[in-house]
Image (cartoon, rainbow, N blue to C red; front, side):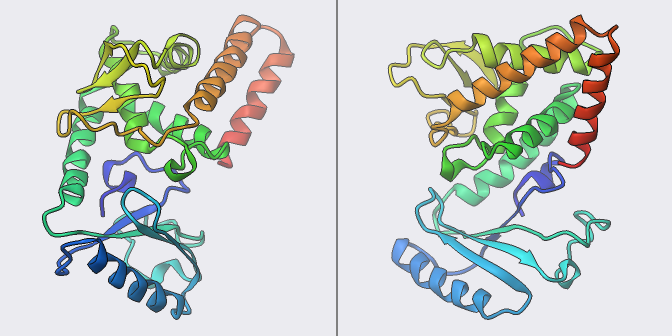
Length: 263
């Protein structure tokens, strides 16, 4: 398991990412053969109501949706109370000589350390993940931004500023920066730092210290939509803060809080 549930950044509707390890897979042909066998076996399982293979993803995976009984597999260590909701699972394979799965495990430790070091990182990332999820901007193979890249964006911003006790104000700063100031042509996140760059591709670039040259956000073609969403939420929150004394705005905030509990 190498996902947000392992890092502690999972939302109520987060997928569970699993890797099949230990098979003698050395190339794409081996992966394709086992990919088909696993797909057929899963489709025959009565506990699974939907199987959706995605062979076009950077790492081919199979999405499983809606287990009829979540307790049929041992998830008690992940979330023992969440037994009544459907579970989305992403399955992929480890290829011999591939760094992907090992890299994923390294990232888990890295994110856990960041959450320990940076106050508010966990809270803010979870809020933003919920926000992106409601607008389907968190799905990488649909052009959204992946959870790890989002975490590094937030962490890089927190790292360059002074410590703040107010998590709400920190959230607003992040929304303002990435929604109204950040320019992919002039800035990137590298090794958890915001750095000045000249990027003619006009694409978001995010990398970490494990794979410095790899753009973790290469598939985020909808990042402009993410920026617009952040800008819109920032303006709404700014409007509420500036007009807090009116009951009308207090009512709007209460509505927003009620809505967020259902995400």
